[in-house]
Length: 200
Length: 200
Image (cartoon, rainbow over all chains, first blue to last red; front, side, top):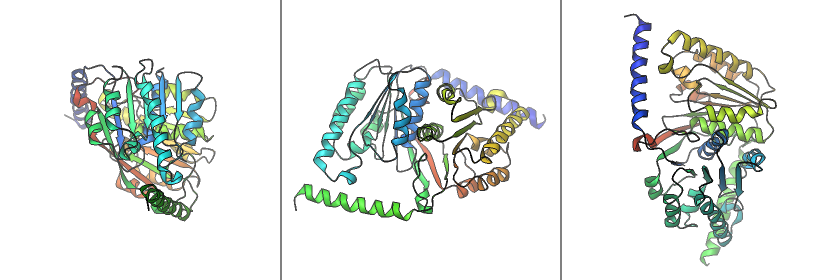
């Protein structure tokens, strides 16, 4: 058997294996995705999934639990779709070390959560992105039990993406797909200034 | 000092530390970002950065080195911007285990690379996403040296994002920011069928 034939054979077997695995995965319901870890890409991956969902014609909701200085690009971009299939809510007033007022941070986090809870209770939303929710959970600004309950009782076909470092164990347990974004290297280390367009 | 005052004090020190680090990072040039690893979110993070870049009014280019079955949502979504600031190219004909023809895969990968090389040589592109380029490099479908050369000699302010598992060491070395997406758990394991809108 020549090399090309061996390659074809190997690829055919690989395709069969993958097709079998996909055929076995037959539960057709919404998934809960969690992006956590200290590396980059947690939020941008969530916004990429939002773009994909809008591309599929889904009705989508976004709650940003932290209004960060890097989010202005996404916000400008996705707000173009607000007349149509997207509800985009930015809550809070920046990272807590920017505001230095804990009571105000808790109030902002709870207001954001109430908006999220409304979306999780509404089957007309096909996709909900809860950006940086984990940070509010880590700080105990929002009761974890209440979040787990809302996720567990959400509409069966609704997809949810939760981002932020430090995802609580119980949330990881409840999720279908969990990815840890791990830092291999970071542009700060090379002294490059944070820039528009790419979150460094 | 009461608890609130201590909290404010802690947050103030943290803000100062972060502000100092940002002030020190003064090299203002385009960054090379690599998303690799076996977990989810590599491509969707790249597409999230694309959305952010479009939101900032950047001119953007995308080359998808693999036309995967999950990319139809992004493609439908982002092609809306093709009249304006975005060039979107989908190359290849799916994963190699779908086509089972190595010579055709190599030809498709090289055609995609030539399009990428053109964008990397054109300073009018502020942001270039090379989705799944790593897979073509791992398979030696595209010469690594040629890719490293094009990246090293690209316009100084151009941002580039490269995605795909198995990023070669020399590419990691050349990059400014590298994230490894690590699988914590995956919906396949729970038998959930791949779905529109969320890449499982």
